[in-house]
Image (cartoon, helix red, strand yellow):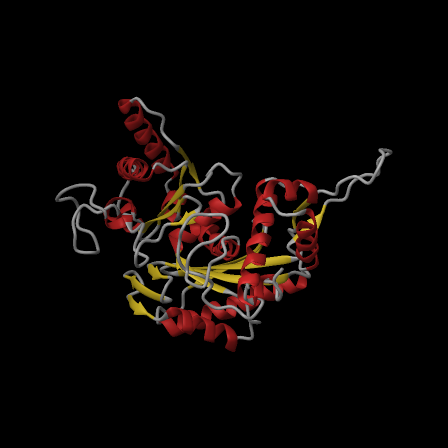
Length: 398
């Protein structure tokens, strides 16, 4: 006999299956969803009705036809009724964006980081999130969740920011502080997710791209620090304690220039914004970025490599040289290099990706044990703060 919790989980899995099918191929009908999902037509009909009522899906209006019988009604992800809010806490800046379920930026702002004290950062972020939520309300959209990207290693199993050297943070219990600040600022109870800022940037490309990332993508963020967000087999790869992707301190040259971490020859010492600010020509840094991309390619074999961050914005020549360097390595090896492109959302990549983190988590339900179920690969972690039945989760199973 199944418990109510089991029924709720099954229902959430089925809902996520339908949403992912429509996200990958919009305009499918209820009958097509039933055929591709393996669910019965009656189950699909019920779930679709709930998803439409809750603003996750909408029907596509069709011109009247003279055909016999009632035509199938195509469906799509609703891009107007719900919104997501994403935040990037950078070393010296806070960026906030409200985003539709389809990845359209509805509103954004940024301001200097006023203080690096965790409690002050949380207060500043909360104020900006409330502003973004007011913008959504003015559009008639319901907030579905908040995502936050931080410049350091975040442990999603504990909610602790392990290490953020450029902020001077170590073992900061960030999640309780930010949820308290959001509550005090008057934000309604919604899911709140936190992750490394390079990881969230990767999700901006993976969740809202045109499917060129398939099931694997790496985002290389070149800013004050250098990091990588890695999506493998349809899931973020964060490592045991959130340290995966800390490529800024991978050594590219023995006895190279000194790095802020105390080592020599780190990637950050060549392509971090501090190093680039001292160069008259960014071509040398572009070569080292190409070496870094080559190492990521041969280690993870991604479908696409995306580069972004302030350094890439300021020195576009660096990206061009990196692409050429990677291609030269591929030619020497007699193989095809992966696609390399610049970030679609520019400097908003991490903030938009933080919003995408909410959707990423919702579309990959977790068993209470932390095991990924339904579509996707084995993983860990689940929503860290959410109100009962938030994100439209059904109250009753079926």
